[in-house]
Image (cartoon, rainbow, N blue to C red; front, side):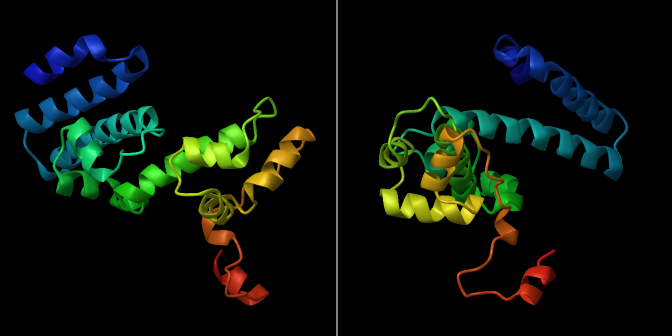
Length: 180
């Protein structure tokens, strides 16, 4: 509770309702201990922790040395706790890469952006433009160049969810239907 009190000045107005819910759930679990109340409190706390992780990742997308170890330090969480928190999204490194790709998508599809695809890749800490393009296409179903061209033409290409994009192994129609 002291930590919450000390952190209140840094809490954003939009986060107050979640903080209120989390504190209420913690107090309820402490006052009348039950497995259900502890589970509710744990979920509420995890929501807050995930939001903190998301904010820190967003602030550090363009930091080349930013990775799981730096994130642990900045969040103030043990490595195992952070990995447990991010396991539903494929892990910590996958979460960071996904956020970088989402930012790249926003930049690439902004028709006012004048940066080249390779400059965007470098800015968001990808090793090189070709690996960035392959990863981007795997994530969104279209290359950054295709997305950029569509945006400049005033079109929006639908992003194909990762699990539904055809595999490089040449999946046939029946295999694609099984993916639904």
